[in-house]
Length: 271
Image 1 (tube, rainbow, N blue to C red):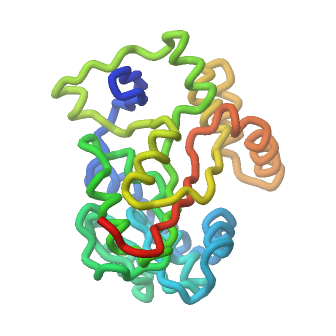
Image 2 (image 1 turned 60 degrees about the vertical axis):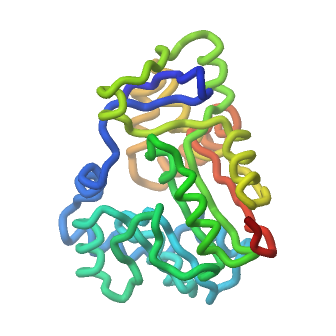
Image 3 (image 1 turned 90 degrees about the vertical axis):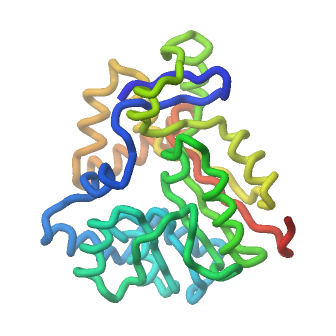
């Protein structure tokens, strides 16, 4: 994956593999036995912790771009009325086969088949950055299906302080749009203030921002550290988990790969 700097739009452009439905079906493709286990996740500290902070069990929550449905399963297990949509058809068919109790279906986050003001919460985990033509339709649909006062939990790659330093030093090649670039586009990384201002202009207010995934940001941007950090990033076990947590806390404000934005829809609908 090659990262370019798009100076006209002040964002990073990742080019390598087109993030279409076929890509995601392949990305989520695992052996049936493993998929059965992964679907029925009972807990997820990140998802459940933030959801419980703002919404009580029993409320309706949608995950737009749910992949294998693990987050939907965790929300369901913890008492939420959880739904999920994803346009990776083969993946959703497997989820429906192995966990038919989950309310997960094929769908397009730009054209959701749910009524207005239907959900209390909406999780979007690494989705909006994969749309080259922009995320306006996605955000409009999120706003439409959320109830007044509902919460959006959004994670997206950002230009961290570390990436900002690299931009100033000219460490990324300049992005020049072409058919080949568009055809192999994977994702963007945005300035955090761009996301905040954009969502505010569409009727959301900012509740919280949390930098996340400092290890990934560090290993992706500092090549000399990548072999060690990749090993640690992939390794399972309690000791590795503790080491990852310590490094993440130490570096996430400087080298975070993503931010979690908690936004709230206006109490009354407006246009």
